[in-house]
Length: 279
Image (cartoon, rainbow, N blue to C red):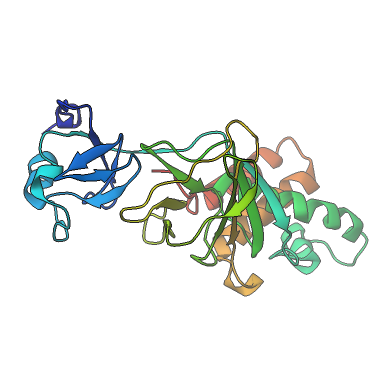
């Protein structure tokens, strides 16, 4: 069945949002009443196994249904695939250093002695920051915040744009309807760390049968998520990422129009294998 054919209008305007990674999980698009029980918009539920197989194909695997079959019957089903836009990423606590040092730079650039160390002290941070921006990875552990002007809509999730997550433990603070700062209980959401052969950035989604709280609208820091990402030590950083940083550093050090483009291309090739892609 094609993606376009998976939408089905709901006679009462209700709707389900089905998570593409775990398709059995669903979030209500609007308020809905099932067997006399009111379920507010944003509630995450488990849809009916048979109905979801009909929508996504017989080969799909789902966990046992936890909500009555008629919860899924007749409701519009939407496949979510977008991160909440507009997040502003900041570094709260910097890393303790960089995974390459002046010895690595001298070796890469075939330099003997420390005559160029002052220049390497400038080029190393720039090269590492380029690798992080290009790949979406944090090279060494640091703490980030990402701020939004609202909580996600029903078809959105919060993307944590630096990998790998050092921990699935995050903190979400928000300003409630009165403008007071609150800390969201960790039972309201779940964190996907995005590990595996084709890792995606970490994501924050609603937990089962939860809803995002009411919050002040349109402040740049209405919702602030704090998370930790990066490799624990320089030795844990993949060599391909270090190679990319060193190639980038050498291209800037050489400054030769005949050599630098080759080095730039090689840096991109080394870094490309480690890019983390949004889904």
